[in-house]
Amino acid sequence: HASTLGLGADCVLELQHQLNIRGTVNTLSRSFDGEESGNDYTFDLSLFSVGGMVDYHIFDGGFRLSGGVLLNSNAADMEAEVTVTEDYEIGGQTYSASEVGLFTGEMEFSSLAPYAGIGWGNAVGVTKSLGLMLDLGVAFQGSPTIALGTSTQLPNAQAQQELEENLRAEEADLEDEISEFTLYPVVSLGLTYRF
Image 1 (cartoon, rainbow, N blue to C red):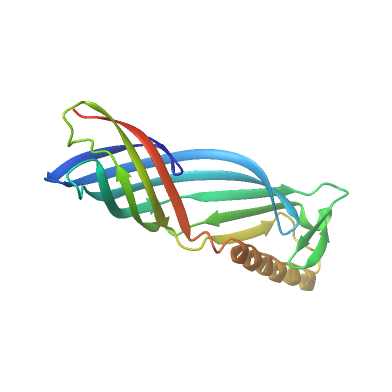
Image 2 (tube, rainbow, N blue to C red):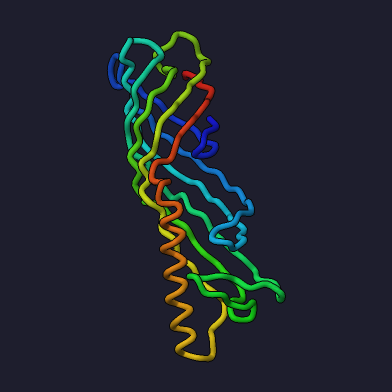
């Protein structure tokens, strides 16, 4: 299947009439450029999740309700290299290129994400070998956490302490901006084959 969780595969087993269990694995890596808090970043997005679902076919057909949990290793690395002529704003204060050096960050989500959704398709309940499967749902991944850092160490201890405090303030600002992404939409379309 291909989904908003990445490319992946499922294994579906019938527990009893109208009730299946499903194991899933998903992965995807992607890089893109973006801007947060007036700073330009390169993002390296890494999606990886494994999970288990229970599918209940309520009308004894293709339509189903699904629920389960994903072990979530989704993360994003951020990196910004300041040029000689650029300044960076961190926690409301401006720093020069020489003071910041390499500006990096990591974004992580909760490692456990409950899942709920609806779908169409029953890989083990049809007489034909080939079929289609569609999933529409949401993963409850929690608010992401941000960790920022710089590659430089300022010579003045007080200035370094202030930089560290501004980094923590910038982390809080970024986390506040993306706090609404506690729910991750899942759309998946796949091809099924019954052995």
